[in-house]
Structures are given as structure tokens and as C-alpha cells.
Image (cartoon, rainbow over all chains, first blue to last red; front, top):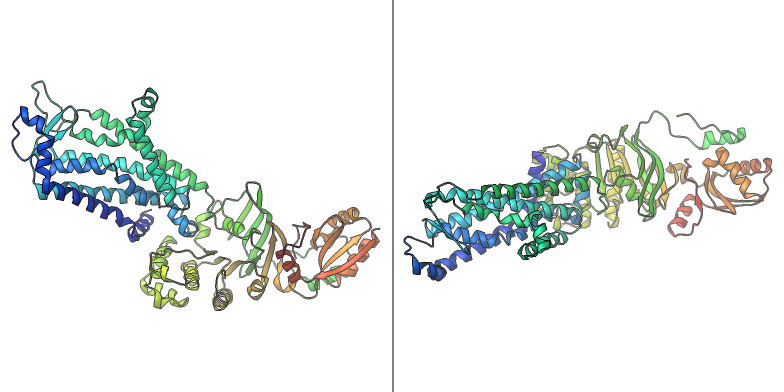
Length: 291
Length: 341
């Protein structure tokens, strides 16, 4: 199996399109960092003006941790497209090139083939998220420095102590990887039904857009199905930045306020991956390769 | 395999059969054995109860016009398509049960040799060798590329290759793991005359010098005639004829159309006798046989002896012309699928 995964990774990283995603993340994150470097203080001052009227805020608010959060929040909406670009091409791209029939005539079982391709897609997804972490967090820390992190939500402002932040980022990126693996699994499944990669890429993104719109509509019918949509759970990574407070209204270092909800979301995402992969194997094992 | 008994036929016919039609012998191992293979795509019968056997060392021509069912059959042999029904045995093993073992000894080029265009020839060859379980050193890979005349372009990406070069690389990929059985689906499609000659010579070399068994499909009789030892012709998914190329293309082999006074009784008699082996097709008015010329009077005599009057006996043409008439769509007859020469 490892031999097959190596072959699939070799093919992925020999394709120019693979590097589009890395280049896009580098460019977008770089632009955001440049923007904040040039005019970030004003932006932060404007965003916190109501808070500044009541409180005196000390320290470096615009730091690498805050910028990492802003970038993560902005980019995770768009990263699915970059992931679908590769995962949606895994089978359909081979069918389009005509290499799928050659692959299937080799002494490798179809199940092994599909699992190795899926694992290779997962490795690509994980590498992309790691690159995003390096760019969004570590480069931001390098440029903007470190301090306590401020997380602004619609009704709450949370300050997280500097030495309590990094592990939350690791957990958040871990969760984001799981969420993005669902996207990879979905695009991968759709790629089995198509003989060109445009179809599965567009279909995957369309499904995510439709589900995201459903999430925003506060109607009883949609509310009933929301818990079952994977998009509902994809933003669960933000939960790692919700800190518990004790009876004295002090933060509990190393705590997560809604851990069961995060774990439930992670479980549902994992279930989606299992279902999508299971369907991929079942369909591909029976599929007639006519391309 | 014993020689077929000729029940219901005279001794003369038995002598002619024994001398003119040499049945393939039993000492050859069946590399491919296909029984009653069928595949439907919706309402369309792509392959309709085809049976054939490819013996060890054969260059087996698989002939039929475009859309006859050749590629579908080959794809079923290579597990690309699931058979609707029927049984495939390769190397004496059931394909559905021992797929990996069979495919590890099989190489294939399926129509166009589509390879990874963004990889070099060397990378493609190395990749497919690994998929067959072989980790070949660069020297060995280069040697294999040299064999198909691509050593100098080994480090160039496949997207820069001509169709002929891709075809040669496809063959190198098919042969990289030294398979015993090589399946080539229309390997000369899109090639110039020199490319076609190269492929032809390669197939002959594989069979004669390397003792490989080759199944090669084509829609050109002339192509199969030059390289194949045995062949099968199919049309509209049905087997028309199978046998030694030498015999099938023998000018003394004639396609004969017979009209009788009682076609129903005549067909019943033929179906119950060994003449059924020679019946190619039939319609409501006539029966078409493929016979040695000396068999024609014998068949005539047998029909008359059985009380069936003969209205007409007409020699149509050679097998080659018959095949050409098929490819030009002139036939409108029921095909006898049980026939083997």
C-alpha cells in the first residue's frame, strides 16, 4: 500500500496544478500580512474603538496570533476550492488522460488503488493546511511578534494569554484538517463519476456553497437538517479559542468551553469521511472503465 | 482434444476433414479460455455469448469491424469491465478469483497508449514497473526504452512525443514486467505505415523470439493475416468464425450459399449434423456455409439423400471478401455462433 501511496504522491507533486494551491495561499496570506503591516494599527483601532472607550488596553493587540486567527477565518472559506482542485482530479483526471484503464490493468486491487489515491489526497490536504499554518501563524509571529491574543466575536471579546495560545492553534489546525479532509473525500467521491476534473471540482464547491447558504437561513425546515450538514461543523475549529471562566470570572488556562460540541462536530466530520470513502470504494469496485 | 467425429457424414467427408482441417492439438496449454461471455450496455448487446481459446505461443488475431465488440471483450479480459455473464480463465485460473496473479503476468496496450503526459518516458516506465511490483534500476529501464527506440528521448516529457513514440512507449510499459501474455487492442491505430510495420515486426519478434502469447485486435484483415497464427472474427458482438488463419484464408476455402426446396427441414438437418460446424449464417431462404471446395458436392449429396431438394448452390467469395462485405454492412443474416474451424 505504501508503494502505491508513494506513486500517487509522486504523480500529484509532478503536476503543475498542485502548486497552484500553495502559490495561492502564499500570495493571499502575504497580501493580508502586507496590508496589516502597512495599515493594521488603524484597522485594529477602528475595530476596537467601542472597547477602548470603556477599557484601557495594554500591549501589542496586532500580533502574530491575532493575524493568524484573522487569516484562518478568512481563508478556510476558500481553501475547499484549492483542495477540490486536486482531490476532484484524482480519478476523473486519470479517466480523462486515459491512464485509468492502464492503472486498473495492473496487478493492484481496485480497493487498494482507491485507498492509496485517497490517502495521497489526504496527505496533499494536510500539507496544504500545514503550509497555511506556517504562512498564517509562524510568518505572522515572525513579522508581528507575539502577545496575548484577542478574539472578537459579535457579543464577546476574549483575551487569551500568550502562553495559552499555541496549543489552541495546533488543535484548531488539526480540526481544520479534518474539515478539509471531508471536502477532499467529497471531491474524491464525485471524481469517480466524471471523466473530466471540472465536473467534480465545480460540483464539490457547489455543494459546499449550497450547504453554507442553508446554514445561514434561520428557517425551521433548514434548522432541522443543519445538524446533519458537514458545513455546519466545519467551523468548529473556532471553539478551541473559547476559554472557560471560573466563578471569579477568571480564565481557566488550558480549558475549552464547549469541548463536547467540538468533539461531536469532529465525530460527524469523521463519519462523513468514512461514508464518502466507503461509497468511493463501493462505486469504483463495480465501475466499468470505458474511458 | 480428439478430432471431431463426423456423425451423419460420409467417410469421404471424414477423410477430407482430417486432411484439410487440422484441428489444434491438445499439447498446447490454453492461455485464455473464454466461455459464453456476454456484456450488455443497457439494451445494446455489446458481446453476445462469445467463446474462444488462445493457446500458448499463439499470435491470436481478434478481428471485427469498429463496434463489433472487440474492445469490450478485451476490456473484460483485463478486468476493466465486469462481464454480464460467462467465464474467463487465463493461465488456467479464474479471472474473477485470481485477478492479481493473472494481471501480474499480462501486459496490455488498450487502443491509444495514454500515459502521464507530464512525466518523462523514464518516469512513466519506472512508475508502471513499480505498479507491477518491480523496482528496476535506471540502466534496466534505459535498456527497455532502447529496445523501443526511445532511449534518446527518455528524459523528455511524454507530451512532446508523437503518436508513434507514445505507441512505442505504451508497448514498453506493457512489456516492462516481462509478461507471458500480451494483449494489444488496435495497436496500429493512428500510426503511419512505418509505425504499423514496426508494431507488426515487434509482435512477430515477441512471438517468435521471446515465445510470448499475443492477442491482438484489429479491424483490418490484412493486418491480422500478416501476423496472426489463429484468429477470431466477431460481428455485432457475436462470434462468426474462429480458426487457423492459414486455413481460414485458404483460397480453396469457399463461402457457399445453398437454397433448398424445404429450408426448414434443411436447417433442422444441418443443425443436427456436423455440417453445423460449417454453417456460417442462415436466413429464411438460404444457408451460407464456409467449406473446402471438395466438401460442396458432399453436402449437396447429403441433403439430397435426406430428401431435401437443391434449388441453387452458389459460390459467393473468399473469407476475405466475406469479411469485407461485413465491414461494408452488406450482410443481413442470422449468424451461427457455434462454429469453429
